[in-house]
Length: 530
Image (tube, rainbow, N blue to C red):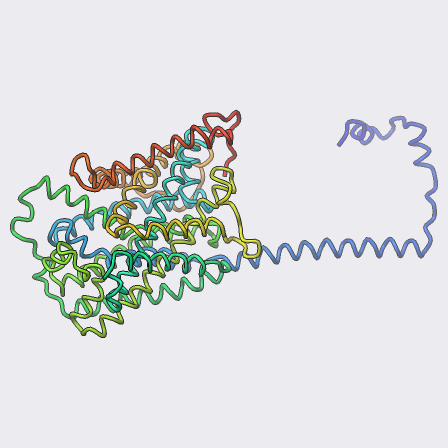
């Protein structure tokens, strides 16, 4: 409202200009019936068009909301990720970490660490229900116009390497299981690597689907996965021998070595359990993410973690820890398809072959659920201007599908399938520990002092805060420092290479990306809040 209009309305006796008086006293030109009808018709048509457009937009929005994944689908995605890359792959390597059933102590510790961490994911997912997960969490936890830009970029840089490592381990494990049926796959060094690469590209192509269809497929695959796990549990406990769980008398004699080996067991446990946060990466595709994302994270971590322990116990009741350990020490093929070997021992060769095919399909299903979540992280960051722009492409007709990000992840995964399976598993767990788990546990402390996020009222706050954060920090820190290294133990330099990856990421950010995009420390204004 302008001042002149304000004064005129407040003082009805105020003087008017001559032109105002003239306009006020001039009789309006009468409108013919035809002109009146025409103008009314045009106005009506315009109103109808506006109403129709609004209705179409509302219908499109409602339709897209209906196509998003509900709570059941969110749990299915997390479950597939966890079980598929779980004990049916790693059980022999877990036992080999300490040489006996004492490795279950490290596995149990990993469950405690991950369950504590799931509350962190739940609170952050409720506060920031957007696709991208830790990329968004770290940016806001450490300050959007300060360290947060660096932390989120480093996370994305590491994520672009670590996630294809995990995916490659899954596809290669699927190929290893098929070698039970086709032994020629293991007759050369390239057989399982080639099939793993093919699986990676097939999965990438299969994910070029509408959002709702991906969720429907995930539900079917989750049901099949649970059926396989149920069969293993029933078969294993039906022939159970509890004596196999007794550790040898000298298991704890060398305490420093035992504690160091527990770190390896925890690393394998961490690999098995990762995935309880899969839908945090794609929260924009989840209905009511403030509620469903935290439930899916905490619920699947606790339930599937318990199921994983039962699966290991079921197999250990039939195949002794000594036999499992020997399979790994001898580099036997049976260690790579332990579930098929387990079923063969009970029901015969044919049943083992069926199990091998089913587990290979289950692992593929896990990677299927994992890959779509992985592709959403760099996609969301690129669209916000915090990562390389090529990742920000969205499919022209399939809403919500990060097409180029998906293909880049798929191609990197296919390349990494040519690395040894054990190296893939440990390299993945080592890389993500500092930039994801530890950084977020610290970040929640910082976020709670933030004027915007710290005062929000949500139902998914971390219980007994900060105890779960402290537990997670201690556990993941121990996993990181006990990783394979060359300087201390003379092993593969996974720890050293992980540190090198972090340093290279910092250099790329400071010397190139941040300078070009005017991000911290070169920014002049605060970064936008997401």
